[in-house]
Image 1 (cartoon, one colour):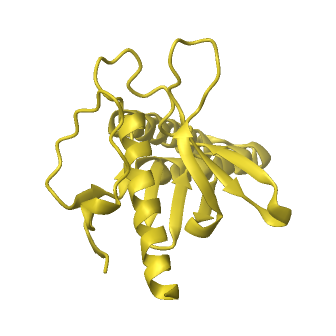
Image 2: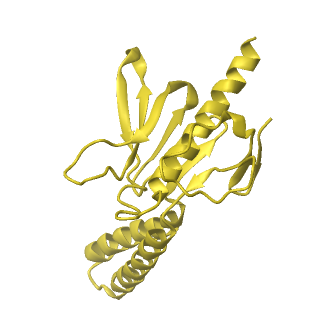
Length: 186
């Protein structure tokens, strides 16, 4: 049985995949994270969006032309919404699947659709930096979802990057879900 406590989930560590090579993860026995974020960039985005929204609100209020006041007011409203959404950006493991919150959209993927979770293989860099979820969609077609909220985060580190830790943790949740499904069908 899984019980959520803040941002950690207690499950059996026997369901965990082998660790990422060179990974140094400090976590107590039997606990896995359920949220991965770039707090620094989330805070930076929140501050930028708040300042921009405040400036646009002031401009909208001071406009004498009603058309431009409505235009500035609408953009200010979007900026306030962005400022409220910015701290929640990241990747979350839920009992039903993975939730990927990006700035302009939220994507939910059921565990049953997930084929695998890997680091993206590509680009011009020496090592991949963005995790991706391979999923089987409608009609059996395999698609990928790149977890941009974690991409590039931890570039040039000597130990496991936060993206690699996220891949390991998400695979642990996927394996735990598959183990639960196997027990429920038997």
